[in-house]
Image 1 (cartoon, rainbow, N blue to C red):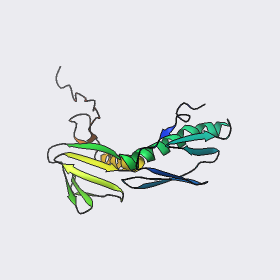
Image 2 (image 1 turned 90 degrees about the vertical axis):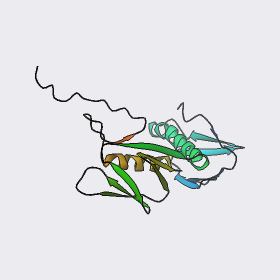
Image 3 (image 1 turned 180 degrees about the vertical axis):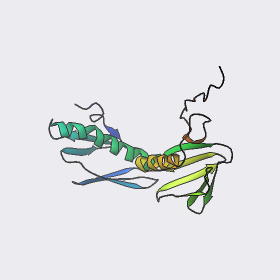
Length: 178
C-alpha cells in the first residue's frame, strides 16, 4: 500500500472540498482549484478529513494512489496558505523591473528580455530578489523555472538567475602558468 496515499488529508477551517465523480474542487480564502479524478481512485470525506483509496492493487492504480493524494494535499495547502519561490539575480548590470503585468529583464544580452507573467501568479521584486507566489504549486514552480531559464547561473562567476536556496558549485577556470 502507498505510504503517502493512505495518509488522510486534514482540511483546515475556511476550506471547502466538493467531490464529484470526475473531479475534486477545493475552495479557500485565497481562491479555488480543480483537479480531475484519476480512474481507479476513490476520494471520500469524513468530517474535516479526506481519504484517498484505490479500487484494486493493479500497478497503474498503485502508481496513481500517492500521486492523487499529493495533488489534493497541494490544492488544500494552496488555497489556505499559498506557495512561493524566491529567485535571486547575480551579476553586474543584471536587473529586473516590473512593467505593468510583465517583467523586463536586463541580463547582459544586446536586448531586454520581456517575460509575460501568467494569470494566477503574483510576482514581487525587492532589489535583486524575485518572489513568485500563487495558489497552484505546479504553476508557481513552472513560472520560477521559466524565469530561471532566461539566464541560468554559470559555474565560473556565478552570474545568472538562481533559486535563493540553490548552491552553485564554482569552477576554478584556467590554471594559467604552472
